[in-house]
Structures are given as C-alpha cells and as structure tokens.
Length: 202
Image (cartoon, rainbow, N blue to C red):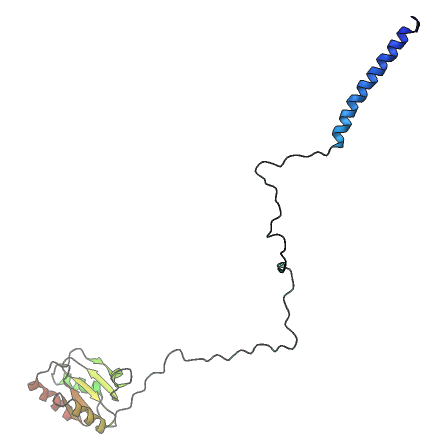
C-alpha cells in the first residue's frame, strides 16, 4: 500500500465502521418488535382460572340453560280434573222459635201489665235466645227477664206445665205462661200480686 492510497483506506474503514454501528442499532429495534408485548395483570384484579365446579364431572349432566323450551307431556296424558269445591253458608241460618198459642199473652205484654199495675219490673230485657239450641234449649216461644220476675211463654200448655213442675216452688203457671222467680229478687209475699195480674190477662 502506497502512501497515496492510505487516506482512501482510512475513509473506507470509517464508512464500514459507521455502517456496522448503524446496523447494530437497527437490530436491537427489530428484535424488540419481534417479541410479543405483554403487560402484567393489574393489581387487585386476579385472573380467573377454571375450577372443578365449572367443568362437568363424569355422570353429571350440565344444567339446562334458562332458554330451553319447557318439557311437553305426551299427547296421551289426560288433563288433570279439578274436584268441585263445596260451598258452605257463611253463617248458620237463624233459629226459628215456635209460635205462642193463639189467645196467650206475649211475654212483653205480661211485663207491661205488671208495670201498669204498679209492680216493679226493673231491667227488662228480651232473652228469647234461651229458648233455642244456642241457649237453654227450653223450646219456649218468648222470654222477657226482669230483676223481679222472668216471664216464659211456651207454644202449648203441656210444655209450660212440664217446666213449671221442674221449677216447683219457684214458679207459677197460667195457661202457656210461666213466671219464674229463680233469678228474681221478689220476696215470696209479693209474688201473689204478679200472679193475680197474670191471671187477669188469660
């Protein structure tokens, strides 16, 4: 090599060195782009992993989806027959009491006659419910009770006589009407006045 060609060799060497450096830098850039870019999972957001409950097990069928059509019964099945429901009355019918016999005074009429005669009949109240099965079941037609005496009217004289005998010593009968003193405050000496007024009505 001659001294005249030395500068040319130096220039070529410098060019080659620069080209090598440039190629080395490009290689690093290309290598980085060849690797897939991955990013670590965000903190606090665990990656869902399949569990045993998510995978079907042998002998166990997967649950049916909500969109599956409902099961259709075979065409031969007869529709269910509904039994007729029994309708019962909301309340029992009212009790019908027997009528008092014709010509017999009513219990209220007897009490009014006592009052008109000046006899005490305080706290008069209708207790005809005692005649029916919900009461005493006496089979009477009317009952008006007072604190002095209780007036019973029966549908016939036979029934009235039977009850008067049961209350013997504490009652008085005139026809179908019975005066009862069991719950009364009337002294025995004053009872005769009530009985006289009742006798005048029948």
